[in-house]
Length: 495
Image (cartoon, rainbow, N blue to C red):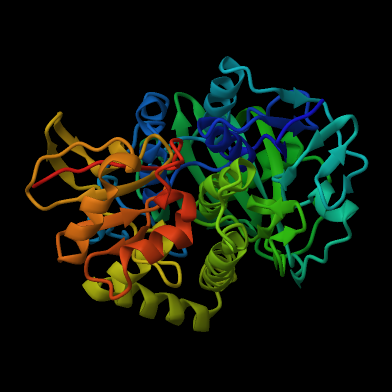
């Protein structure tokens, strides 16, 4: 089989990357060793920036139909009782969206299958042969391969790529369960994450409802003893923790699914090895606090997807593919730092000094400026890559074709040149009136160049010419009238 890009791993990262490539018309094959998709809920939601990115592609609205009921309350930092307020970041989605990982994966995979994208389950990679022209896996040959195969990445191990960091000090359990009986202390409605923390009988736990009779139960021992990560989670083990924390009145009904997770923190030094790229947990792992893993992976995929498509199409400017590592590595490095800090603050050891630290952090989060900073960090809304502007705010626009907003204009997966100067125009390709737009921009018109991932690449306030930014991100072809299939769509709106 011949394809352009081989994606290994059918989790959220791999599926989102395949979605991006398919949108760009790039042939892709997804390989997944698991024959059936896990039904365990695992990650419980999407951070605001991830919700924005999915909306940029028109994927969020159908996903909201699969979302769980959730009140309008913010995220958390280290489980502290102060809600993180994202409203000051000017987002349409100031609250985390409760979409279990399993539902997100099912949605993305079905979209790919419906469009004829091969998602080959039960395909276990045992060898990989990269060379200067492409990558071969079994009988599949591609120009590029992206490893999205998780924290225990087979691709990473086959290539012998080091994965430096800290080893796990302890393992905890996350399980989807039902209850045969429950005490009065068990919460049955959606509330802020901090309300679910409980301690008792040598255990710490988080027990919160998912949907109907289903609960997510996270627990571990206060002794911080290190168990075997691969040891199966038993019903007896879960029942013991339930009784210890919630009292003997709380009884386990059914153990639907369960797994163990640790607090290891590791990150690749390079996200690229020739024609092989790494994304999601294959590139970085950390304690799963605040849904950071799924959100990091989806944003890795969207950052890499359009750049990889540009390389396949042949118009990628020099350095575009390498900018994936340059931009995304620092973002994950910061998440590793913040999750390690949160693991210390959340430490359930009942240490008096740690309790004092938690009190101080709680007081800090009550300050609007501190809350704004932490909310931006945890949600991903504050991400700003070196040399770029921030994410583009999803402004409401009036255009000759009627009202719209910035996010809808990016659903093609292409770049966007947006002119907000009060002159109603509609431009569908660079080849017609690009010179006029550039001239107006040079005269100070309110113009902004937006990358496909929603970040501002240039604005009229920049000192460098627009042509420089266009060439850097979209290549010389963006200026060639002879090229009729540009990757940048220019449209204009006005206030």
